[in-house]
Length: 454
Image (cartoon, rainbow, N blue to C red):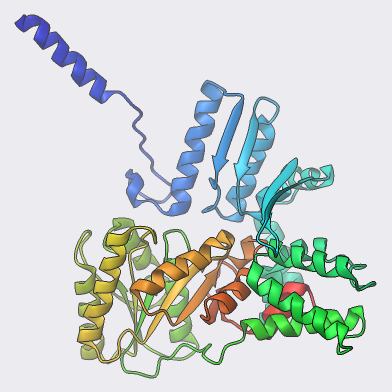
């Protein structure tokens, strides 16, 4: 009986050890822990594993949910080339917000909501020319270099370039003949185009309703005037009297919140660089995202790139204590601005949201009026989900504005208008690229004009 018991125990131990263990060493790093990798690196690991399993034992059908969301353009192209290569051996269904991935599809499916609140499924088979263009495209770096040389680095040109996917998606719906004849079909197609760009049902209904009324009373008389008025109305929706970031206090505390993967850490680095290089302010960044060790490492890299100081705590330490120490350091060293990173918590995790509220209370007690700005970073590719994130964070933190990132990687640039209109929350900064200078103040008129291609 004892022998049998011992054998059973050995079998239990063997069962407990079954599974797959993955060790990863990205180029230029020594770490092998997945928890210390960035979002993009984790995505690459997951995709490498999926394709390795595919080659070992192919399955005829795969559903891939947002697997490339954290990848840059170069790695998205590599991912799509692999999908195309293996598409004769398996069917891939990809749930995505990436316009680049959508362009590579054979058939595109989507769910959209009309002004009456009724959803419908739409589908479109894409022309083969798009696939040929992808397969024979020049390397992303070469394309980016050529575009940069030809378009220059003007702010408006860069904004138009970053919104090219949103603009192309809108222009596909707003054809050159749409405004030739103004009738019920015109308003319906205009509503559908704006909703597809994630302007939002409520905002779309308001804007189109005003246009229709102005046409009926004779204020707008033709298609050209209608298009110009559309730009004006969209700019009016997004405009705010409180679009500037207040850094007049000494020190000023900026609290940055948002969900993991939105570009929060990158935004902090870019913002610190702008404050130092363009305004001549001294900056400390506070690594108060202590729930994830990699977040501290990533912020250290961005602080070094921006040339600013950093105050860090230990992993799993008290984030409120890090903010407290950063404020103390700023006061003792005469630093102008403290930018506090916070945990990239999911907005559905109540206990973590309560922890965020606690960090805010610590800041309030330590420094009069702090935090002076509470900015939520929202990934534009998430579309309407960004609205829900902002609503949830607003309960824990008194938000003063929005930083909208990844506008260069989405066809849903209209979300900036939906946020401004439906949440009455100003969009203060927009991310239009990967470079340090690609974080710009939000200008409603320029944005609306760039969105429509005017």
